[in-house]
Length: 349
Image (tube, rainbow, N blue to C red; front, side, top):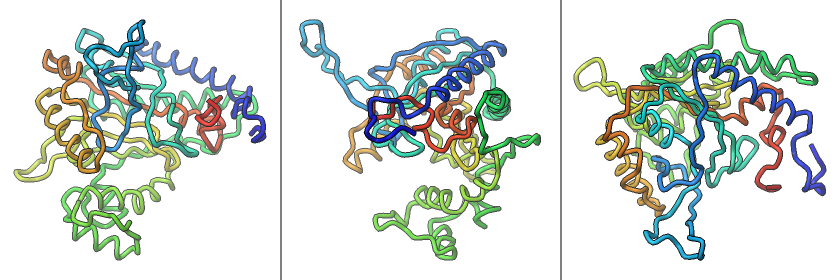
């Protein structure tokens, strides 16, 4: 790492940045060899994320004369290229990928930077299970490429065995001792007490989602950290985001969100969905997420979007994945922080 008084220099070494370049080349070769083609979409858009807990950067655009646009609409730096890429699927794209930058407020630390590299892709006719298989092949390819680079010392060697897969429900049953999908707030609270888990002062004890998230961090993720590579899939329906919900096998049983996350050495690397294609359901989720934001005195989400128009026209059945590229490169090159694999983090940008 460079000295603090050398702020004009990158935080990553030149050799590491060269290695990063080679890994980016390997990623493009991997996707192109499997029939994907690369796309580019705007970083600034009228559309933004559908998530109560992600804050986008807000801006406005001006005409040449310096006058704000007549509609007075805000523009957002994209937290993900998801909306625009799905519009391309509606227009006839079949399997596409993108390497881009994304922007999120209030994210800073050894594993976060407000501006970060994202690898995102979509393919028609697949499910989240198909995508898990694809992600594993991609990660192995990147690690094999990194292993051949000079001066690279891995902190994580991948097993030859297939990556383990745990459903959200099975993970809670095995590592927390209760159902993650069907338990009550009181059930979760009892488990928290049994494990002496401290609860924040402003914690909503009657909210199952809050308990699920707390126990995931305190009980589940430490167990996942013991494994080199593991998928967690089929989340509670309340955590669906833009994934479709599969109804339970029995009448009255809770449905599950057809999404997954990959953890490498306990670090979340990507988020994949069997994508929601129902525009009316998306409208309902936007309303629900906006209500959550307004409850915390945060700006509401736009009620309409180009994505909704595209879904009204007909978004094909598809699956997609968004992967934190800086994190994957960090692990593959044996580094400890994102600052070691990006040139200029926010403090030096």
